[in-house]
Image 1 (cartoon, rainbow, N blue to C red):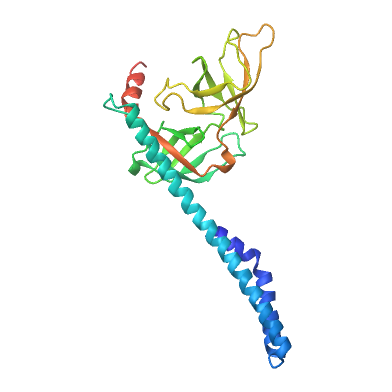
Image 2 (image 1 turned 45 degrees about the horizontal axis):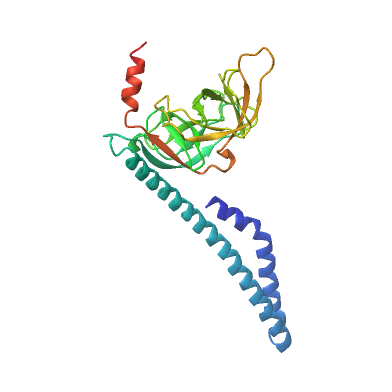
Length: 263
């Protein structure tokens, strides 16, 4: 609705001008055949322009509806695939679609709010992804909404691995460019090349293994250092993020209880 109002306000001056022009032609020239013909031509053009604008507005809302439908279909398909992959197991991951209703991208501690909460089965610590890959981790849960810490938050740490050899590292963001994050804890003996694929490791209940995270943009290993300095280009475009999927791990509570029991 806000976008519709913006479009109407954008053309408000032009609409008033056209209305006044039409009224002037109608009052001054209606009795003359040629001006009447000219007026009708102008009116027809105006009507055509109106239809074009209304068509664009209608197309906008239709596209949004189609995107929401597509997001729901993606979740249904992903859940089906998960059920097929875990046919031999009693429990499996489940995905719940959600819409991003608020988000920041220009802060050190960015966050996003989604329209799912406790009534939908969400709880703190669940992973959030989209069709491109990992997005973040649920931090705070209300009844109807939840706050997610995205990968572009300096507090977020994500266990990842190289798809080519399963070598594990920790993904962190340095607070600079939201297109990139840094992969730490990768030892010097590991061969790292630009283009290497980085995915979730599956070593925590937050994400199952193998969810895309990004690709290696560059890697630097200075003489005498024990670890690579690795820059990863993230798959998720946070500037265009609208729809996400929450990973509901059936075994998450049990796993977290076991870990907490070690303290």
